[in-house]
Length: 378
Ligand SMILES: Nc1ncnc2c1ncn2[C@@H]1O[C@H](COP(=O)(O)OP(=O)(O)O)[C@@H](O)[C@H]1O
Ligand SMILES: [Mg+2]
Image (tube, rainbow, N blue to C red; front, side, top):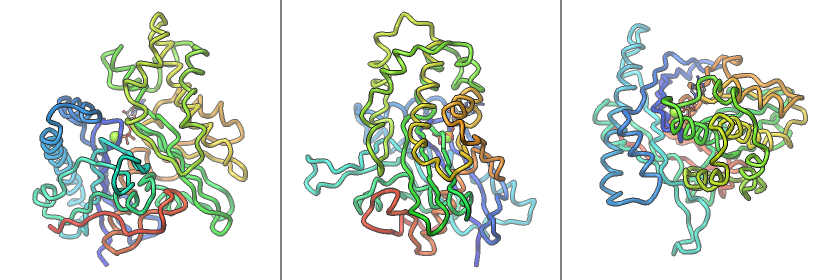
């Protein structure tokens, strides 16, 4: 069976698209090659704007989706060029799993909706991507889980279990994207796999950094480390009902928006920007370790993936909050931080192509396992 798949992920950090080409024929899977492409700054700004209601947004969303497909096609071309050296031709790729860009995530049942159903919306143009690449594309992975009453997120825990799960211990995997999500992977037979969004990941730290420095993010967390904690601001940020909600739960920029941040920061305008950055980083860490703390029994490690794993100050604060665990990046387990989520969407595409479920009802709260996504044949 053809076992090569491409996975493409562009998360809520809005930094760009990460891609991997994966061979699933061996155990463990083999990442043959990886490539990332940043979003042009105008596309990034438009995607951020489309996260909130605005003028003529249907038309603008369709154009943004086309621009996303162009970035995706660029990543695919680069992956294929790199793989050619290893004798892998485009015809060997069974499908591309293309997550798309989430601009709305409201899976909870809305009383105003006639069907009572919520929704989640990822901008994408899988038809155009199939046209540009000549490869089958699988897209819209989340809607079916939401239709079955689930959160539509996180979808990565099943993949995390396959890659990082152990038979003797519970494994905790934390993805630090724009939003952070935790997977709780008990040894098989000893309990269900759990997973939920902890809260903000890089999104708020990035926003503050962009506002006050010329940089897209706080490299290594050095700026945050140069500041001091503002305890009353930390308490104010943590005063958000989402954190006390039990799983299944998921969130996005709908809740943790720039407006939310501006309201929380308003009383602290006189403080030094680096002290605010330090406190936002502590807040991000606290949202994560508060989520992880009740699952650390029988566990020895927190495996961190996503670009936030490069924020050394954040990693130190996570370690301080979870002293009984070893906090490591996913590289320690053979998969670099920016490849994990992209590989998960390659795996999810494979599940769909093989008509196998991609979700875990124990994670999302869906009525049951479902084959996810839609296939756009080449
Ligand atoms: N060297 C670094 N230091 C600190 N943060 C980093 C570094 N590299 C990447 N990041 C963070 O990771 C983010 C990208 O992570 P990613 O996993 O792609 O998130 P998402 O899935 O939300 O797009 C960047 O926006 C930035 O916040
Ligand atoms: Mg990203």
